Length: 517
Image (cartoon, rainbow, N blue to C red; front, side, top):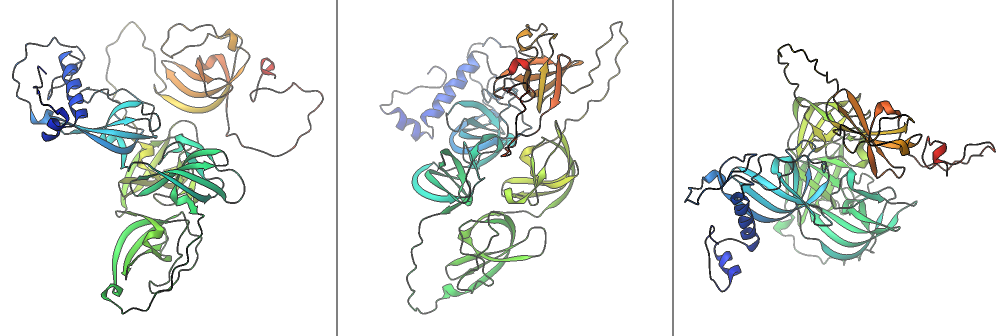
């Protein structure tokens, strides 16, 4: 290579290894160098510019220590925070591109460090499609082990959610377990994310990932052999120490022990909930945690280490901070709470204000306690965004042209509404920025779902979706629509008698005569 040096080594892979490089790293270095030569990014250690410059004759530059690039393979997972700097095509880009792929779990295949900045290369977990580089501070990251094949059956409660990826979020739900009573979950794959185990399998025709904490092994337990009397050793010495952590008791466990000397534990229903851990004890070859109610002094009992998912916790600290939170986000009665400890959900349309008064770190994650719309509870910081500071008003010179007053924020909001298009409308747009709309005649006098809303100038536009609720059609001005809020769809088993005189069955709620089946 003219710029990177060369070798005629018989074994280039071995040659690279001897210099602490991999073949993938060589490829990345070559790719970055050619991007620099083409003027797409700035040379190492300098700032990028929007105007490409013609490269001058190569000289022998002195590489600043702050501009050195290192790339390494990575096998982890990450969730992009709502507030982020965007995705970068290369780590040399000055600014990232805005992304909607937030609060989802992605695979991380590489780590790059440029100067003092660290990046992760994120990709779709199932397809491998790369999304781009993202700054370390813009994600919640966890280490992951490679998936392994398994062949195991578990029982699972109805209503438990399945996800398209391990450690999935509410945006990656593959379905819920149906039926009444415990169902059989047949696992075919297993992966460890941080300290938690996730299994992929099928139940009642649905497939997806579920945390092992929500599964119970259906295999019959093998009777333990009667222990032979032995001479007590120093391993039977009891050690107790204070601890500050949290734990969730697995569905399958040995019960709660009143003292660590008890031979057997008492069955407990306090499973799959988060408790505070105040002490740990070791006796013989067993280790125990003393768990208590997080919000009160009530002690629950001692539980064996293997029967819980444990995480270290720092002491809570008082804060006074305001965030924005999306409607539908769950609040919990404890930090790192489970579905059994939900305190409510954020109501309203559009981003709401969450006033935080307390903060606690659990393992690597931050949780905040606060209030929103009269409801209080804990929320992971990953689901909160710091509101943008209002810009100071700047005096402007008088002008003969009257400026348009912007009365609404220029942001896109997720909404749940339904709308009927008026017969006389100004048309449909692929983007709110289009000056001229296309004819909206074929949508007139029909009802559609509304999923997005955006203000542009003095006008407000909404994104219409087809009656299947999953294909965007385009943007309409709200002046061209009759809009109503849309509640959550719920199943019912009630029976009704249809009047002989009726308007027919419609393919969509609040449908018009043009949508009768």
